[in-house]
Image (cartoon, rainbow, N blue to C red; front, side, top):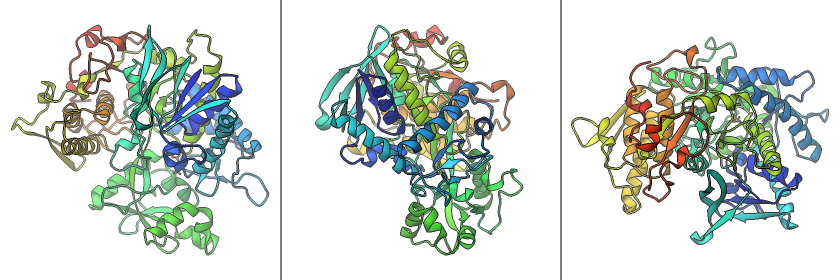
Length: 601
Ligand code: SIN
């Protein structure tokens, strides 16, 4: 039996491919896809606006899509993975259209293809205007629901995976926690994590509330290698009307259709900053907005879509972007007549569980697909609308591989082999679960009491609070607030050594999954002493050609964590072939070396 965890585009595609290959499948989702999908099951997939990138237009070429993907990825894209994405992706999208996916079509009946940032051609397939993710999710959910209805697939809703079961170094199942907190164990020939990314940890985010990296931690605690965690993509245009930075995405497709960005004085600040101006890669546009906001002392820039309405006639915006138009109107704004306020927010995580071209992790029996995985396909910055595509391509690849696996656990792809042979950054579990430990004093404010982190114009002050399972609800809320503030201050658009160090200290003082994952991201960001793609270091502003490689990261576990989540000592070192200092696993220092020795570039 193959256990697929997650019901977004990757999980659904995986389940369907595994079924088609003759496997028994159980799909587990914290939400509900039967009979109607809810937002928890749809996750970020159902929220996706822009579309699916695929070179299916007349005159477009897969190799052109590949070239754009590689350019956006700022020197870190795994070429084999990206070639698989663009070639298999075009086939997958054609197959979906043939199977009846209700995409938007032009007057000639052909797929209407949109343009988005850093694409050299209009190749974004969309549906329902700006509701592509919801349409695609409903389409795939229907097929899974049909399979469940005739007993071909077991669907477990309202459940999440608490831990992975391991035998002799391989993942052989999972412990589920279902409705009412009831636990049960599933044995499986393969477990597939399709649980999404961790951009939901950031206070300003476009993500679904469940996107908090649970799958990354499950895999890390089972000993799997992680990679590229430092690369967190910030989307440039999120409607900025709430003081806490939360807001709805305004798709890049809007700029693709002709909208432009202006500062508070009405100036088009992207012109002259990049040859593609407003349609530069996302990391470039987000950084420019960050610069403008800092220079002008403002909290938002302006997205001017009025030209789309003028060119297309009255109602053009509402026709092309019905979902965003409704959101904008609900906020009392009229974007057909005036620019709307926008600001960047965390959107997508390129990092995750290191996987090969078939989604195999470094731990036998454990696969990952979609945003939870890090195949290197996006490098340091994902190209617009390549994420749904990734879910389709790797969902299917993993489903096929898991269904036909005969236990050999052979990896496919040069990039993954290189990653396995590279020295891993070792991060002790204690780094995120060391409330009161000596580690917390390493970077503590010598004046005592709290820790103060200042980076890129923001400050977080934190005092140690009880945060373990025994802590009061108030203490837990305080702890969550401190961790979120440290994520924002230390891991935002612009990072530096001081900010990372201070954030690490906060993460060490608090227990819980958010602190644990943030500590991992912090260690990865500290280890990359350069600026590249979505990872920008104010103190290491240049891109360093000598660091143009991905870096594995491994969590080293202590015997018992505050929530009983940590596995047996040394378990992390039991599988995988990445080199790792033996001492790190045997006697973990609470603070990862990458953070401790963090000083210059
Ligand atoms: C958007 O519509 O701008 C988001 C699509 C994506 O994240 O690729």
